[in-house]
Image (cartoon, rainbow, N blue to C red):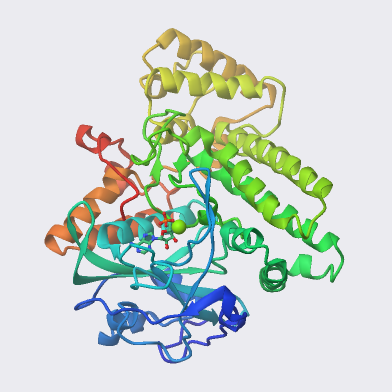
Length: 495
Ligand code: AMP
Ligand code: MG
């Protein structure tokens, strides 16, 4: 795939805009004041075959700062609803992110160009339609970091800064972020038409998503099974996605059903956080007073959201089928989660007692407030020899005796499957990242950007997190747990 397209020659094919008017509103981005390029991501540009040289053009920041429209773009805001913190909200929609259009590349892949922070739409409610630079940088870096970790996610093409003043807890600079995804359709899109009892539209939307994004389901043609099969696929993808989040220690922060992708990709980065010290009750969103979206609750919340989607599908899918698929969610989650955690422990086979081995390690980590990412990374170099005390790893734990006991059990388990240290270490380092986007790392990049207009740290982090499994020894310090100031950063819904 050659990246040869210019801003003017992207191939748009705006299928969502061709849906009937009830699905969206035509809008135009509101230009940011004096836009400038903050960061450009060549990897994402390659997805739409956009030449990286385009980022050097003076028009580039204008284009993604809302000043000019790309030829072929038909900007719309789509309408959706959703369950927010458990309660149904009947009308949400793209309140500040505008779908500029869909670009088709030469592999016939379709990418939504979604501009976050692009100004007011009919769905902005009482808000301003804007996004601040701080939150755009966080989403930009995290979506690429997730991709680097092998976790399905929206992607990020660029961040554009400005002299626009946006009021949050204080005045902050406004910005936009252009994100790419094969689709931005959410569970909430279906809920909207279900609760309005517009079942024809519900069917139109479902047929549209199946035809566009689920070719294997589309092949089933017009049987009632088609919709059950579709729901099944969404449930499976959601289960696998959340299992991946749990394995890597990612908390989304606002898992409302309007932030759940029908493609099973991570969507809408707000007050997310990666675990530093292991704490299953970790709440990354300071506005989440009851911890509904705490780290350990995410699998159950996935189930809750799938139930919301199931309800929306009741006009299309028989109840028994839905029930079976919800069970499938739980089964797939359990299976994939076990598989991922087994790989993190470096075990090739599944044996009775593996669960206890994992729980034992997690309990040790919790008791010692040990760093989740670091412990698993150091575990990769665990030595099986009876006399080896694995001192570096041992140093993470307060209760040495408990660790020694656990380590003895682990050695026995490794021997039982004929594990070899070197081979296992290599395998484990491909699933246990050395680097994750810790909150304090993002915070440092944001401070430099907002206070000094220095965007170099954003680029450094982006490069680092493209391959979080590689040693990158010159970047060692980025693997460190947060310093004290970095443990107390407040991240709220305000973005
Ligand atoms: P979120 O919590 O970011 O997923 O957003 C929930 C809903 O609020 C969505 O409909 C958003 O489009 C809308 N929203 C969030 N922030 C803003 C904003 N600053 N201006 C307009 N709408 C917003
Ligand atoms: Mg959202």
